[in-house]
Image (cartoon, rainbow, N blue to C red):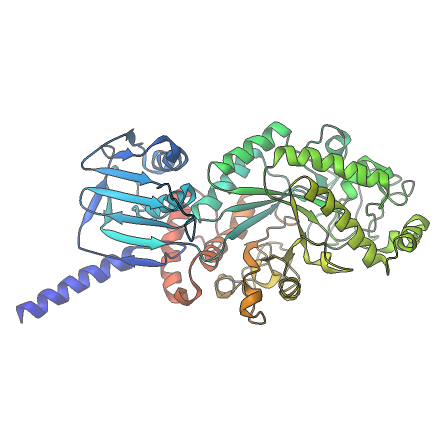
Length: 539
C-alpha cells in the first residue's frame, strides 16, 4: 500500500510540474526525467564561446530588464551554469532551427542545430522562469527536444497609414523573437505615406512622407483632423533596425508597393502617374484638408485610381529606388506589393493601350503581369526574389515569384499547384486589424478574428496534394494600421493573437491542444504584464 501511495505522489508531483510549465509555442517533446529544481541566481554563470554572443546578450538583457541582474560569461564551470553550444556539423542538420534544452541539478544545457536553434532554446528557457521578479529563479528539471513546423514564421507591420518610431520597431522585433518567429515584413510605402529615405529621390520623404490631414473615425469618416502628419526612417535608422533584427535571427523583408498604392510617391513625383496634371482624386464622401488642386498624399483609406504609369521613366525610378533598398536590406526577398491595382488610369491612357498592343498583352491584367515580371527580372539579376500579394497571379505569375495569399487561401492553393512558393496570410485567420470581439468598443477595420480562430488555423490547405504541400513555406499575421494610431492600440490588436499564431507555425499540428493552450495563455498574459504591454482581455 505504501508503495502505491509513493508512486501516486511521485506521479502527482510530476504532473503538477508539467502543468506549471507554460511554454508558447508548445515544444515538440517535453519530458521530466526526475523531480527537482535548478535555481538561477546572480551567481549563475554562462559557459559559451563568442559565436553565441547574440543569445547571451538577449538572455542577459531580459534578465536585467525583468529580474534585475545579469550573468557573468566564463569559459568553464562545473556547477551552477548555463551552457550554450552550437556544434559544427559535417553534414547539414535536418532542421537548422532545432534545439534541445536540459535542466538538471547543476546546470542548464541548450544546444542548437544552428545559432538560430540555440537562440530559440533561450526563448524556451525564459518561459521556464517564474513570472514574479526575484533574484532566485527556480526552474524544474526538464528535457525538451524541439523544432519548428514551418520555415517562414512572420509578423507584418504597416507604418504607412500610421508611423511608429524606431525604438518601438525594435520592441516589436523583440516580440517576434520571444515568440520564436523569424521574419518581420515591414510595409514601408503606400498611398498615405512613404517611410523610407531614398537619397536619389529626396522628395519621396520630404513630400510623400507627410499628409495634410487624416479622416476622423471609421471610413468615410466624421470629418478631417487637419493635422500635418507623417514621418520616415533615415537610411541609418533602417540599417540599425535591420542589424537589431539580425542579432535576433530575424529577417526584415521590406515592402515597396507597386504598381498601385502609390499615391505618396506620385505626390512627390507626379510624372510617375499616367496623368501628371490631374489632381489627386478622393471620395466625395470623405473630408479633405488643404490643397486639392495638385497631386497629394491621401488622407483617407481605400483603393485609389492613381497608379504608376508603366513608362521607362517609372521603371528607371523604381530600379533606382530598389537599388538603395537592396543596399539596406540583405534579405533574399523584396516584397513588391502588387495588390489592389485599379486599372481605370491604364484604360484611359493612350500610352498604356499602345503598350498592351506592342507587347501582345491580353488586357490591363496582362499589363500588370508585365509590370511585375519586369521588376522581378531586374531583382533576379541582383540575386533577389520577389514576394507579391496574390493579385500578382492575375494575367500570369512572374516566373520566380513567391505568392502571399491574403484574399482567402485560393491564391496560395493556385500558386502552389503552379509550383511556386507560398506564404499564407488569409484575412479570416491572419489579419490582426480585425476585431477580437463581436462587441468591439474601439474602431477597427471590421471583421471578427478571435483568438480561437487564429489557433484553429492550419496553413496547409487540404486541397493540396503531398507534392504541392511542400511549397507552403509558412504564414504570417498582417497588421494594417488605418485604425491603429497608437502603441497601446497596436499591442491590444496583436496580443494575445500573436501567441496563438506562433504555436500554429511552430508546433506540429497533431500536438496542438486548444484547452491546454488556453491554460498556458493565462501565464503568458502575466508575462505580457511583466513586459508592460497592453493586450485584449487585460483586467
